[in-house]
Length: 576
Image (cartoon, rainbow, N blue to C red; front, side, top):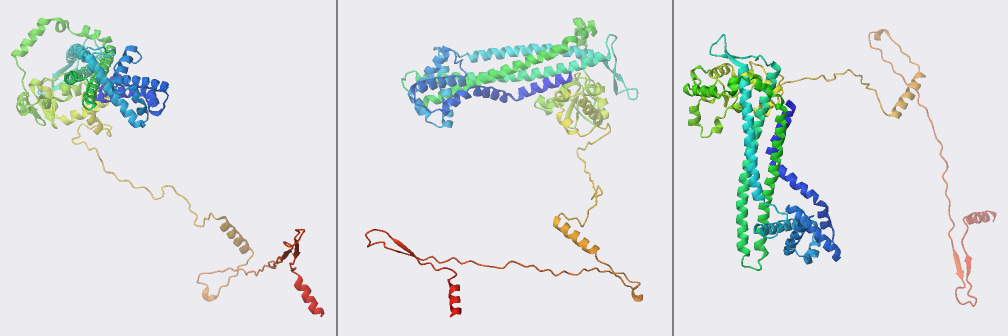
């Protein structure tokens, strides 16, 4: 039950507060539907006449969809839009349009949609043949009046249920004098004979739901009234612009586009505002229908309430009139300021003198009795504004009786802390009592102390960690180099083959012993190969017979000297 209350509360709050997003989502959905046609118009550049006619037809369709004036699949609507578009953008200018860039095409299509929409609205306003256009001003006025009437009836029904619940619960939670202090009271639960504690808790939850319903209906009522005012101002503005157009085109056959196009676009913009109000009213009606279903789920056990209420209080109108006369003869006593210690009394006289607006003097928690709300664990019974209010921390709190105010004044901080703890267990009261900031402020605390005078939301703390919380061994001789490890292995192998000698004299027996270990160096030598060289012979050839011969045959004489010729020369010299 509580989860459903919270879900409906948050969804209603979001829809009421984010109405601009509702309009944007609707417009964006229409734009998404026209994206394929828009892409086809902005990406193609053709010159074939048949394809041009087809693209022009698609341009008419997208202009009709963007304007929201009728269904383009209907022949009459499409014909009307084609005539309006051809008057401002004939088909012979379509090739020039296709030669533009993508951004310029999209901007021009949007402008054409506004101009065509303004032309069709102007024709419809003066009873010319225009199909697919609804009489939005009349429809919206009737819809706003009907919505306000439905909201009024629902509010009346909810208020009657709230009155019955408050009467039953006030008889269950009785104020009894405090034995220690007669000026203070204790709120005691007295279960009627035919009831049980579970039934009383159910009626308390039902009262919370009814008050949420009443709050939502109030918000919807104010939003519908805003829609009605917006519709009235837009209709008045639309009528003025259409009259300006009528005066402008009355005696003229041709008008410059710089004069008339801006007026057509302004008319289209006003009509779009009226369409936005239709979207909002539709969303508000959906919310109201959801709230009706929500309350219907609670009303299945309300017949128990009628059987538990006293017949004299419920049906006897004469008794109610007598009680009302007695209340008028004996006016309510006001809170005595001399008995207040920790708070300040805010009376009806202060409200009329110090505050020019009633809003600033509104009691906290929607006018419910603060003491019964806290002690009754979420009991939303009304307070009595005639006795005045108590001001604590720049906030006004209302009470059902003077004794309840005196009881709260004895320790207001304790009661407010108990209230925050109680609301944590009933999240459906967070928005209804406007306590979201208080819950968030103390969210880090598991439980609020009743005696806490000042709650701190910050705390300074210091911590010190160990340098090495986990013991570990670090080898100082660790090496990751493989060649270094091999070098150490060879060195250890050589040391194992050596012997260590030590001597000690009488004069050095008290001294430390030092030892050294050496190993002889080895002389090694290497032999490399001999260097050698090769010499290539120097080529020398002689070609003769290139000219002057009858047979045209050339001959080559090889004159290259061999490399070993010098050996033969030296041998010849030795022999000689």
